[in-house]
Image (cartoon, rainbow over the protein chains, first blue to last red):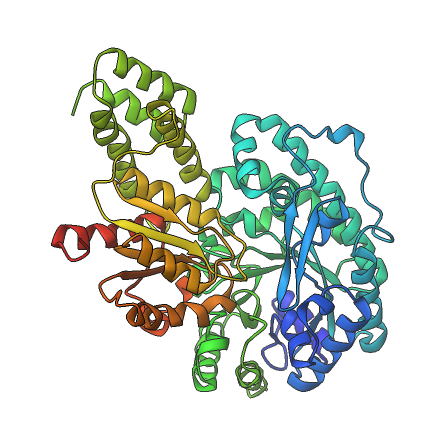
Length: 337
Length: 214
């Protein structure tokens, strides 16, 4: 099996030839290639070249055309600050609670902000890798885009003080994400991962997730699948246990679970869904490779009888991670052949 | 507890800022001193929220709504911009250099202030040296650092040594935030890693009670 076939088998709860392994290597790919983070997140060509080098070095099963969590909000008019060794951050939010959404148009991914660069990265990676290795794009979840557009504090207050207005904002965000995600699939990504950290129960109660976020995620995934996405991959970090049971309703095919979620609870909540996780991200920086190898083996044993598992970290592997730790995780998976 | 403060506590816990302010006005009209509104209203509400917010049930939205209502009541009680008188130690807090996230830090500030601490906020993107300067100037009993990105960890590890060089050996060091709480207190070289803002406040309260931090 090649990487794509291996992952497809896991998604379909079938037996792969070995446990697939996806290292959530984003900015780290730039760092190990000698590029600064600020360069990495602004050039699709550089990003793709760094992802290819990292793939060659680590030999995992997926690459990422993924920049940071500010791409969409920048395309809609937010101002960012770029620092050499940090991901960009929003310095001015484009929207406020009083923004008239009716007057706004959905940004064109071919020309808005860094969206074209991300599409370029997806296209290059797919051209290079064809259907051998999974090429993953990225869109935010609607709740996360809303918080990136108006600011976390304002978004949460708006959700309570003007729930109808907030629901309209979430719907607008969903429209933006459908268009951007569709463009990524058209550019060559096998699927865009949906990053929804602001949908975490650490941020909002699960009832809020169910009432406000779930309908938008369901709509987003429905459209992405319709556009040709291989699978719907949802990534919500933190203690997501209470919202996992809603994933199936949203149409999720791959569910990321963070280090603070018990793998057995995740299995129980999602018996028919492929899971990926959940090594603690900081361990890739602080621990020796033996710890990563041990944790990888423990996880693979926990999932041995289930199928439907992709060995991964619980969230992004920090850019400053020790390369030997990523190699240790991949090596542990490759030994299961 | 004054019987009427029950309504204020309920309004605060529901995050209803306009009702909390009108209950506060009513209590003042009844002649209840400001100090008692703080101790029997705000502090009681914070303690109830603390009991309710376990690690599994801690969510930002609920805490922020209570925090907003609390700040509205404080503004009502101290219209000239003051804060409740400190009955406990002085806590310096910041997000370290490179980290521009400050929501978690803001929540900790409200929780500590409502629990009787004097808070000295160094803001976000704060250099370690500036943090230590402030701790020295303010005679801090504790330093709290919040981190959402792992790259600030080397800075956290330096704080104890830098405090030691200034003779600030009795200052308690706390860390929290999504990135830092993945690490142990030992690996960060701090006294405590807090899962939540309330978790951190409880740690400080233990030292207050034992007189260690005073």
